[in-house]
Length: 104
Figure 1: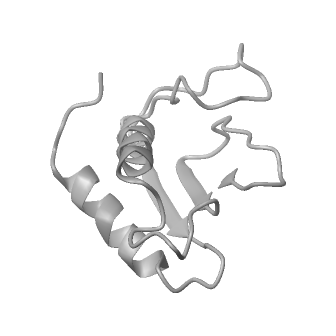
Figure 2 (figure 1 turned 90 degrees about the vertical axis):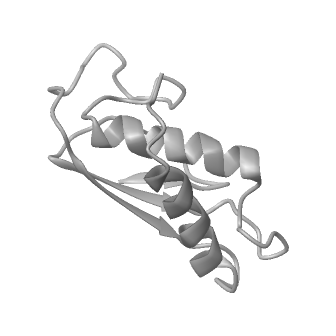
């Protein structure tokens, strides 16, 4: 589990055949939970995980330990404040991921 949380440490080491990400720092004051820039960054990370790689901008407990590079299922959940805008955040992220833009 990767948790984008204000209080808990984020650890992005891949330890399974899938990635489960909980995006929890968005805001109900934002129509899509996260800013457009934030959603673009998450979309790039999702694509990287799906390709079986590790996003270079996320902290890992053991940076020297690389998981095998192989395609992975990626499950992303928006769990923010009152959860009012979470579905909109999920839809905005899906649009970005589905655009088919390659990850650098």
